[in-house]
Image (tube, rainbow, N blue to C red; front, side):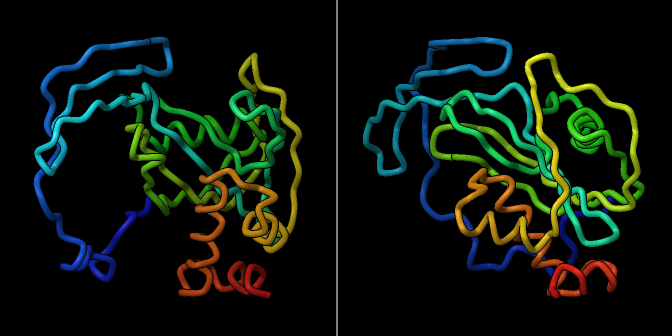
Length: 209
């Protein structure tokens, strides 16, 4: 698995931390299930003022995958989402326990959701999702050298699968037709890699055409 950053991408000095961190006077678990925990905190703000805070703790790390085919197409999935009661087209995504290597989780999710495996995996982005109220961390992977494999979706998942030109997927995402945050971020990151010459030349040419 390729490293996410190299010496050319070191954090610049202007991104240093400022001020005091948050403090906690007390906490209590309000809700708990196999996927999330909701904790209420009597907190102390960086300004020194008391504050009531609620945090959603996730028991899995989020995983997203860009399955990029040799012809410049990308595989996406459609499904009904519960929280917003909408239909959402997205990149293949899922969760991996904190004890599991995110790459292993990505390989499993790609097989389960779209029946693909990849010869070339690259970690391309690490994200904090809604970091004002949750501790959820997402890992985004680029998967290339794709071939079919066996995989079974979770018993609650009902997917539609489509294979579309990368440019069409990117245009749909930035137009707001695919608003899932991981999808938008990973498609933009992949395009950025093509612009910077970080992808195989033939694939970059297809993405940028």
